[in-house]
Amino acid sequence: MSPRFLPAMLLTAACAWSQAPVIPDTPAGHTLTAWLDAFNSGDRARIQAYLAKYEPTKPLDATVAFREQTGGFELLGIDKSERLHIEFRVKEKGSPTTAFGKIEVKDADPAEVVSFPLRAIPPGMTAADMNPKIDAATRERVIGGAIAALNEFYVYPETAKKMEEALRARQKKGEYDAAGGSELAALLTTHLQEVSHDKHLRVNFVPSKLPNGEPAPRPDAETLMRTQMERTNCFFEKAELLPPNIGYLKFNAFPDPALCGATATAAMNFLGNVDAIIFDLRDNGGGDPKMVAFLSTYLFGESTHLNDLYNRKEDTTTQYWTLSYVPGKRLTGKPVFVLTSKHTFSGAEEFTYNLKNLKRATIVGETTGGGAHPVSGHRIDDHFTIGVPFARAVNPISKTNWEGTGVEPDVKVPADEALDVAKKMAAEQIGNERAKKK
Image (cartoon, rainbow, N blue to C red; front, side, top):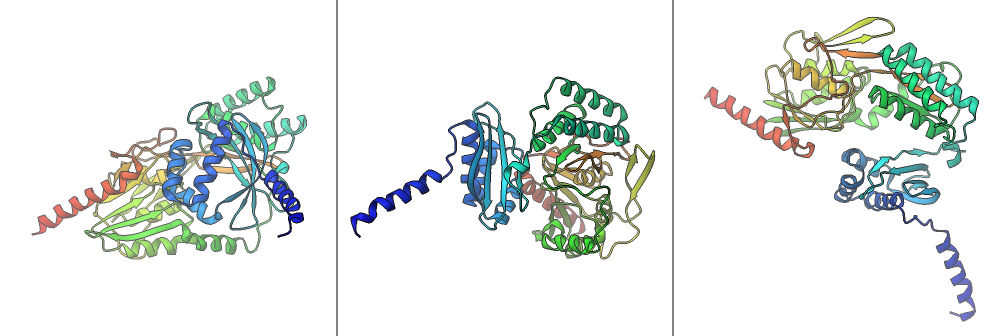
């Protein structure tokens, strides 16, 4: 190669090198580096090690599934960097999708993550649109709108008043003055939850403009939802037979039985002749109480009162009972085990709590997340919404629920050991039953 070409090549290489994003040498920067290295590796053990060190509350299976969905991320740029805070842009390796992320960490070693939102940037928008500047009028509209929705709908009116007082006090001190759109939503959520301790309560910021009023239902909405459910198999992940004839069912949500009843039926019918069954809810974030009732019906031989929901604004109570009919065999009298973790939440907690109080299952694992209030969404303005818990569960036996406390397991073990413990217990019970019949 002619030497006269070398300077140009070196210059090109130097330009390319200089354009590569440099992650700052800060606690937040170190966390971003650790996340990218582990996430992009696709190695389950490395991802698990990262989570244990930096994000111990994030579920491993969901993180691994997200990695498989995206193919990993390419770092495009660092937009803002402080010692304990970093904002950045990434691109999915498996698609053209770009995303905007923010990591905030504790001032500790290791720098455990306080918050790590990562949101796809809508087409035609930039990272700046994900956290735009907010003027005083918009700030007042958002805070006032959130307060109004809470006072009208929140399940505990006295707590709604306390939340109003807390937000107004912080607003008066100017704590929200410098916040952009997504920052304001995050701050309001944090401050509302500090008062209510309600993990369902959340203020959301949406970069693209929301429709005015209630949007008209799309004629293909049900088709789109059904397609999404089909792609995820309605969140039913595994249905297996384990020795000695133990049924194992892992599913990560309780979707509407109108859309997913057939999938639930197929899973339960596949396990219809087992001698014991294990429901794995360690990664289950909840869903529709109708699916809770549907699946519960397979465990009872007669009509059984499961749970009630009290609606504060309407002053009404809706009862939930097992159904008079479900397709296939029921597992009446067969041993039941439910696996839980700190990620088990909402409707998954209801399923667990119902069976525990009815003494129909043995709960194995960790104390659950503690969310017992169903939520309704309310539009505040063109870009902000609030999810308001509007009702509370009332168990017909305990006369209370699991809000803020979670469901305590009968056998408390680390979540990653729960399946082995349950299998051993189930096998022992099956062995004892077989011995009685000899």
